[in-house]
Image 1 (cartoon, one colour):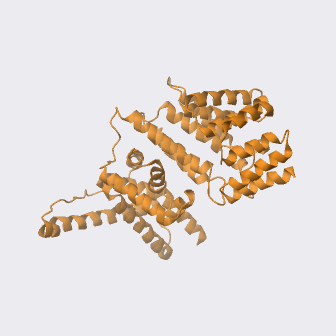
Image 2 (cartoon, one colour):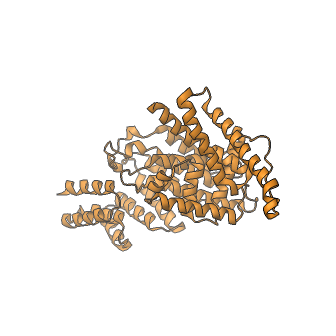
Image 3 (cartoon, one colour):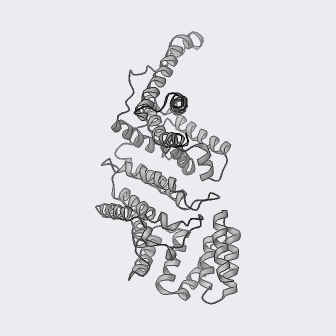
Length: 411
């Protein structure tokens, strides 16, 4: 029974998003909640039927057939109501006449999902809401899971998603690929949302996890979706996918059995996923096909060097040089912090400490941790003081446990 439940959950995450995308594509984004209700009802029926009669030979085909029937029934019934009943009351004659079939072919599913991705990533909706919608509509996450990812509650997430869907309606966003002249700018927004989604998983703020692999791999899946179409298979797309592959290759080594993070220099490199590293190298190669260098290119090359053992000659000088380039192109406090760590590894703690003290990233526990690490070479009480500060600022139980472990090593 437990095995069936797990399979159904996996099937829900895979098929829910496909069916919602196709139904929304056929009837319009204003019916996205109707599509979600129909597909949810389909899974409810599957749970009841399969429990009593056993699993069908082809569960996905069974779901598509039931979802088609429910969708056509809903819109036919709605059509009768709006065509025959409503005009008698309000004189309105608008109605949708459903086509006789719904296309759940693999290619149409992929096309619908890509169009849904661009629709959700419309600039009319705030980034945080776009990520929430992407998790719900494109990745099949439940409200509970989204609430956990955002450190929020179900009610707040439901309201946020409702407002975002209202925005899709009021802005009359359609599920179409943007016109050719708008595509480059819209693609930038899509890539940015995928990047943020990956970061939500990579720097998980949930109470018990330092890494949400499921979020990261969904971001990677959405990125790969873009490579199937010439217009979206651009150098920056490939650079972002390379970046995600390189980071994902070290997931297993990055997490200890007790869920505490494993520092880079302590990772068992035999746990690195060489298949993902090779895939990353392929996408990095593809990203070099144009004349543009984006922050994704530079971050992917930094991540590439992190897939080399710590004692590789020239590794940290290369990473430092790339961070210098990245900061010149697109300054951010987190990049400046990481650049200072690279400086520490390349040129030593004294040089890095001078640079770190200039940053003044107040209330940033990663900054306090870096200062703590740098002061271990010259002033142990001050180092412990910074680690204590980092522990106080850390947001999750897991991070606090990790920092406490470091303090214990120093005392």
